[in-house]
Image (tube, rainbow, N blue to C red; front, side):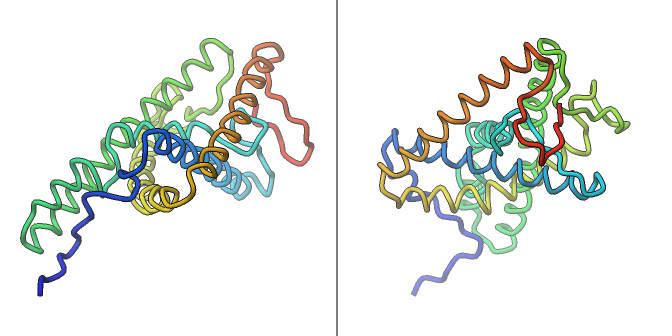
Amino acid sequence: MEKTKVLDFPRRSVYQEQSGWKKICILTVLAIFISFLGWVSETILFYFTRDGEFVDRGLLTLPFCPLYGFGVLLVYAVLRTPQTGIWGKIIGHTQSKIGKFFAVLLCILLYAVAAALLASLLEYATGFVYHRYFGTRLWSYRRHPDNINGYVSIRFSLLWGLLCVSVMGAVWYPLMNVLARINTKAVAVTAILFFALITADFVFNSVYLWLHGTRFLPFDFFSPQL
């Protein structure tokens, strides 16, 4: 009987067997889900760091921070997940248990560094564009001594790298295969509906920000960020 290989990640997933259209819909749903998680995380963080004050983070009126979604899409496009792509090949070709163990550690470290660079580039570019052309800072790291023009902070860049490893390995990869098993029509309708809503929200608030210098916030429950 063949022995089970320790830490041997699968080389193919159910997702890889899907059509191109369904793959696009799956990635869209995942990006939207991560955008929601990003909004929830930042809202909770600011609640506990702002003396119980709810701050509606991000640009949109809806509870999404698309930067998180675009970030994970960029990371996936370049690096895939820690279980797939070049990382899976490196780990899969390592024979001994101790060698596989160190291969996993090395891949996680390299993945985190590369993901941190990609996330920081996206964060810097987004912050720069909105500051330069809309006259608004969506966020600022200027109170941190390791900031770069206030758009990124090295300590937070390292945090993004660690979060990317965790999210892409423990959330993105499993959910990608779960969604692959769901009916194509259901996944497509969900992707199209939420994509349309978020796109409309983004366009509306970008125009509103351009005209009024602030975002549109119809509810008094949250304190506006912009």
